[in-house]
Image (tube, rainbow, N blue to C red; front, top):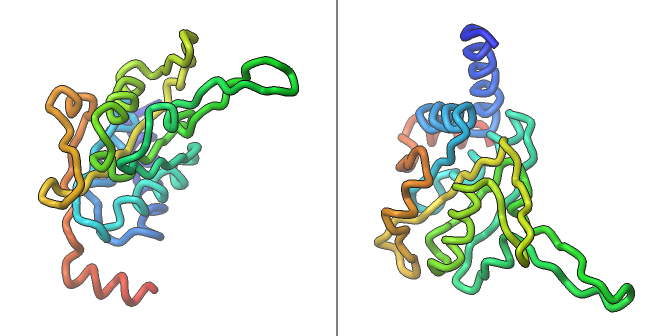
Length: 189
């Protein structure tokens, strides 16, 4: 693929995302770089800044499978990666894949869950595979995580340690839209 083709593809993706999201051009550029380089991105910002909408629009514009996990304080690692469940009809175990088995995973509010669950996701990001009951399951080369996190000053968050932050290619701070962008949002809706 030539550089001109990549530029053209990037511009088409930006235009498609702009149909649903106002502004956020720098973040869209970082999402594209992360996608093309096989990296992951962490979006930090207060609630209501379209982080979730941006990730969903990005997946649709690129044409890849999208999955979302809402991280909560009671989320367990098995809720993310899946588990082998016993089927009484067949007297055997059946693999139930978790929501991590997708191409673009939105890890929404990753810092609202305890470190043990964060570690399960971050291991999968590094290895691009998960292990369930000793058996390895590949996530694929196109596996990408877009994680959102609320500012650390908010109540009920668990900060991501530096050792886990290094799994992300980028950390982008998302701010509230400018007055001009707010007018554009209101006009569009």
